[in-house]
Length: 107
Ligand code: SF4
Ligand code: SF4
Image (tube, rainbow, N blue to C red; front, side, top):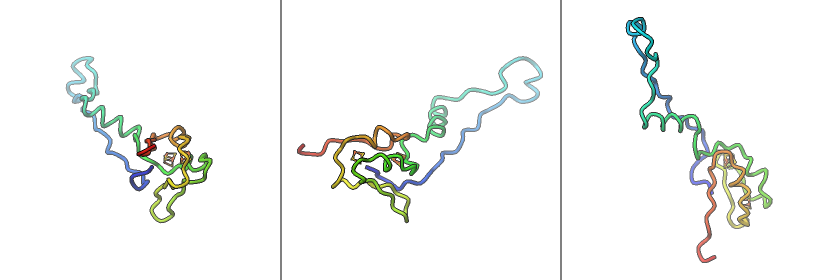
């Protein structure tokens, strides 16, 4: 089930440190420095946009029970759990991994 509005948010790109022009002339050191672990994680999140619904609506096209709809005002993709049979197709086809299946309590 979607927990937040489906609007595209992009993280700022990490600016890499580079060797000064003067230092470049003195040798063959790499011009661009690598990323620190925390920077690499942020950069990967920027590229992959992990777990953020982008309202592509693939899930609603493939839902056999037609219980996934999109709110025209907010853009939010909603699942009507009263009609969902829990087949998991939506979660398996979502390219963003934005849908998580969970067992209902008492079942
Ligand atoms: S398939 Fe995933 S990304 Fe696309 S609308 Fe459904 S939940 Fe959002
Ligand atoms: S689990 Fe199946 S029935 Fe429920 S919303 Fe996803 S595709 Fe539709």
